[in-house]
Image 1: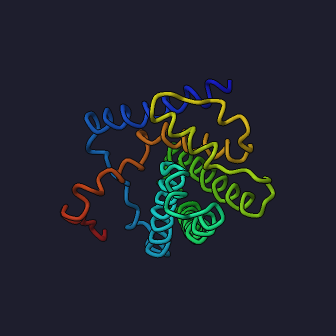
Image 2: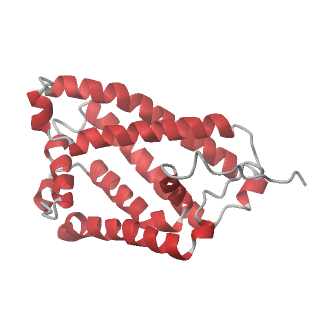
Image 3: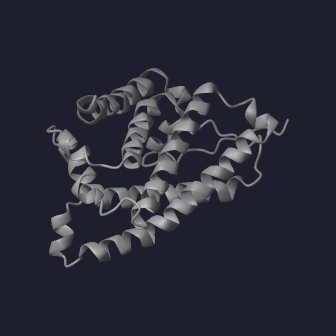
Length: 223
């Protein structure tokens, strides 16, 4: 099971993410959308979307540095372990707050409004559950690690090299053996997100670098 979870499942997730997304775009481009619901309810949408996406971008940037940048590189620049974690927390805590509060506000808007609830599909419900799991486990693992509850665990010596070994097609499963359960759950949540990605509204984020700012506005009639 360990070999499957940390040696095979990541490639299953990447396959769904890449191949599934390409297939959906080629066969169902007309539904390549976030399914905007602004015309159903505008209450708190602007601030919630702003908080959610800003927290998301900050979290992605932090993960990129923490996972893809090897420890020896930061050491070469004179950034010791204590300073690195202080920098990581100074950006990670605001990111987690923005991300979680923005997500909570969006969920309250969607499930607290009858018009929004009836326009929420089953796949949306699954997506929101997985996103909540990813955000909750991410915030909790960061908090537990920062407070020392997890001991002297250092994800830069375990999870980070494991992920890089996955990208190099040489998965080192043994690196995940000593990883605390909460971090393992967080890893499973991102893989679940990657697997479900092509079947959800998340695909709209791939339009961001190409057409989003130059496309014509979508106009809805008032009645």
